[in-house]
Image (tube, rainbow, N blue to C red; front, top):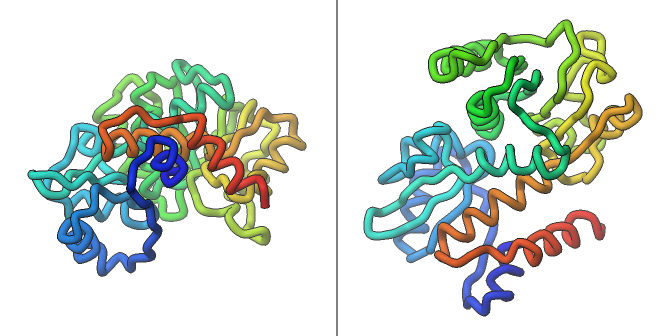
Length: 257
């Protein structure tokens, strides 16, 4: 989507993917800065680590405690978070959901999951249920929500009642033989109205197929990917992102195969 956007705006820029071991992340950020990169995106598992490794944090990164976009300027490496707004924008556009007063189950509290939990809590939801492989992590994020957004009822574990939305923020679903990210004995999918899976490739994960079969409204993470990318594009270039061009490029790349 970025290379399509650069081409559409006539920019002689290039977006490239590099696999970086977490232990080399600091060196990779320094290297990109030394090579005059305009900026970088960071994905799993770098978003939380990078908070301590950049030279300055934008308000967005401070607020949501994770960095997924870095811009290099006279201050050095400045960390931003473009995920948070992208999550809620995608939920509104793709599921038509108003989060205020909603009950939500969020599965997975990694970099994107933690950002999602805090952002969703800020939208004045009624109740938020957090489920994570390591319960301590979910407890820590629940504690932060209680402190920052005291009007939101937050608990760790599967709800016993119906909810408006289930969000999968784990990587389960990327592979065809992955297990479902939730245990249907503990929470049957018919207990939710909608399911959002942050995984966007494949376009329909096992979770989304099961949710559809249970009569739920469904959406994958393509909208979130698009909007966080568009915001990153604007941070780096200072130009409005050509959203339609970026969406088309994403859809061709993900759905045409």
